Image: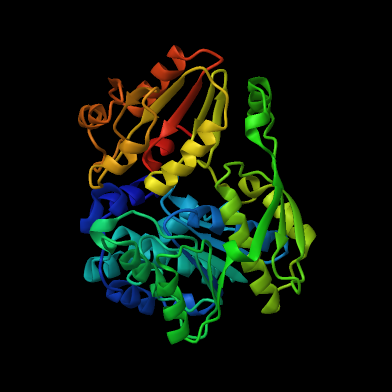
Amino acid sequence: MNYTQTLDYLYTQLPMFTRVGASAFKKDLTNTIELCARLDNPQHKFKTIHVGGTNGKGSTSHMLAAVLQTAGYKTGLYTSPHLKDFRERIRINGEMISEQEVVDFVAIHQPDFEEIEPSFFEMTVALAFDAFARHQVDIAIIEVGLGGRLDSTNIITPLLSIITNIGWDHMNMLGNTLPEIAAEKAGIIKPNVPVIIGEYQEEIASVFTNKATTNNSKLSFASEQWKIQETRDKKQETRDKEQETAKSGELLPVALKSTDHHSSLTTHYLQLDLTGTYQLKNVKTVLSAVEELCEKGFNISNEQVAKALSQVKTLTGLAGRWHTLSTHPLTICDTGHNADGIAEVLKNIAAIPYEQLHFVIGMVNDKDITKVLSMLPKDAIYYFCKPDIPRGLEASHLQEQALIFNLHGKSYLSVINALEAAQSAATDKDLVFAGGSTFVVAEIV
């Protein structure tokens, strides 16, 4: 099989969560353990950092990878889902693994797949671990796919565990309360392995402190370790300035001061190329992780941190986070797709001057969308569409549900049709935003 045929085989033969939803989620680690055993347990042959959470784990993983590779470490990065190319999930020093590696792996291990019957995600995790071992990476950043305790990635014993935050997402699999969801995410906390929690949330903090105590794991909350000193106030910018910012790729300046007077990294003056204001939460997590890594013997300077965080997109290929598609009209997309993610998106939208908001939105059919719809601005013009995956929610049904919340607009045959209609209707003083699902963004970046 060539690369295209190999992907067709993977997409059609292996249950894939992004396409079919919960039925592809395996609630135990048996398949991953067995598959990796047949690969001589590659996950034990390199150091790892495990990154989980509801929102921000992808950005945090990419930032950390950028820092480590800038510091001279050969760095693996495993993330999901991909936007355009399957190989986005598995990178080494920012470069995707080759098509041939994917072809060869599947060809060699197809008999194992047919015997073990892994999910698409289980197979991909095994491929990533195998690639990182073969390429002899110094360290790999491993992003959790879903949850934590039963996620396929949870067969590693990392140097450091990170949980960015806890929010409402995948409740049908992870639990119906934040403490229940937190308990699943806390499943990546390992005995004697330090853990960093990105955001202190009073309702669930005890879930993490109890788990860390049980496991004799050093625990820290990044949000309590760093204080934002200053950042650009977008509300003070004119419309012309905002468009120039988007066009030129201007960086988001931020100064962060450690709340620990004994910290070796007292203050950071950074220029972030990930300009969504929600990245200010993630950068605190990254700085706490860097401090922990330095305590473990890694050699990472303040200058290397600053350099890396100014070019994360270039170094790692990250896309889809507060991503400017065009400036006339100003068109931005973002992968935020649950209540907390949309709340952050809306904060960023509110910071941009515009006369009319044109909102291109598509969602998936296996989530409760009412919470998100209830948050959206009623004075926007909506362009409803269906992401081109089996899980995509029909645009007409989304339009009907949105009408309940007094959100008005038309439905379109595709994401591209909806975006083109929005851009055609918008003036240069308007704002076009596209999102609601990672899979909407995947079709337009």
